[in-house]
Image (cartoon, rainbow, N blue to C red; front, top):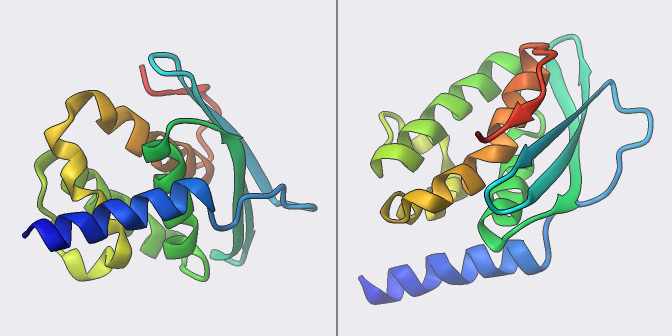
Length: 148
């Protein structure tokens, strides 16, 4: 179990230090900002969506390792999914991060490395900030996205 936990920690560290899709997305069809006032995490999410398909997704911002890793893993997982599929992954991720288990873990892939966040309740908002920002983009929610 320690080897698996070490692997998971390494994946989170790698994604926080070298995040995937960390850049502005020129000509994004959607852009949304999210903020976690408790620890200062900020994210700007850029999404290109065409006919219900997420053709590209990138982010910028500053945050803790968990927030950055979550955003990086999320962009990898959501790219080339339909809006419906992305919302299904959002739902599974929410279950995973709040209970430690998902109903359909096969939909999560590498996102499952964040399951251990459930043991650190103060970090749940860090891990979910990118996801709530994504959900706001996909559902066209005009409200300010805050983890509070």
